[in-house]
Amino acid sequence: MEPNQERAQTAIYLSLLAIQIGGAIAFVWQELPEFRQVLTNPGEQLPKDASSDLTTAGILFVMQVAFWIRLLRVPIPFWRPNVFLNHLFLFYGRLSFIFGSALFSVVVFRHLPELGRATDFVLMAWRGTIFVGCLFALFCTTLEVERLGQAFAGNRK
Image 1 (cartoon, rainbow, N blue to C red):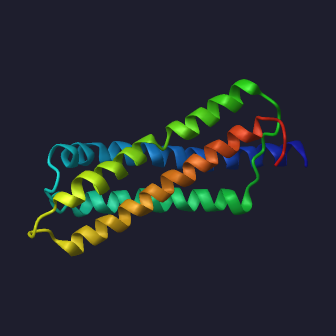
Image 2: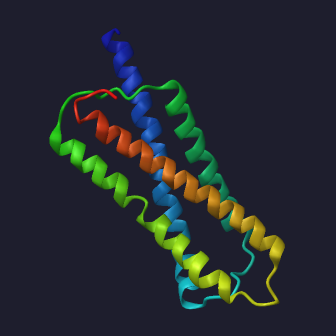
């Protein structure tokens, strides 16, 4: 591969990775107030907020587009041994899903069992779909960062 083509491929890869990581950060930032409310008021349905729901769905969509383009079209350009970067990216990959795991635990094991009869099940189904999609997007980003960490292990798998 020519040096210019290699640089362009690296820039595309880093851009797609930045979109995924930026999306994960934006998702966590967006959902922290709602997470806090669900944690302190289990069973109380969050008020309907179409702009927040659409923002979250948009973040999910952008993260997934970046992930699948990278996975199907853009190879990881780094295949040099670097023990420090290997461990750093593997650590970040594992760390990046902690918020998703905590959110899942609070919603499924603490919040849902407390919901009462006044629950809007259509809204709950819509938000549940977005929630599962966002957890999947966080999982995909975690995989991507761990793949990058493996690339610095020095052995192609």
